[in-house]
Image (tube, rainbow, N blue to C red; front, side):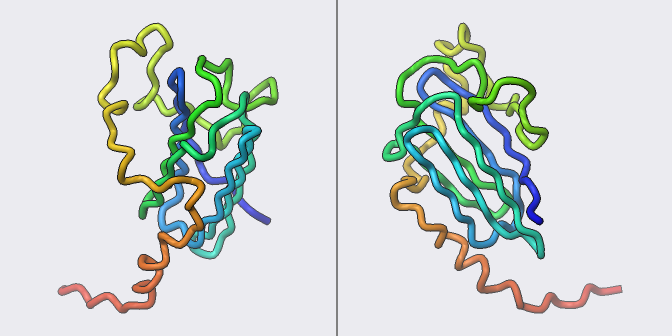
Length: 153
């Protein structure tokens, strides 16, 4: 049985910000589809984490970016057509419990013109989704078996 990772989200007129909170994610498999679907799977510790989302609208995979870090996976997903969505996912009703608003990145629609500091974030260091194959974490995996020195008493 798999678990759901915590996912934070915020939006702008033209993009979505998603942060998958999963420290030490191993071998992430992330697929983004133009019709607005995201599938995620990764191991952390001995557990498998999975999430499948169907977004409220379509997206541009070739313009979207991803960055896999030690503590989380950050995605900047470009919307196919500009505008604020009523909600992140297509399904009406209460959002899944693992999906939460990222209030640190959130900007209200009428305040978007006053650019936030996060909107100045350099996307150049992020990988294109079209080139993402999950190989970024291989270096981090290589030192997993190293012994830590004993602490002084």
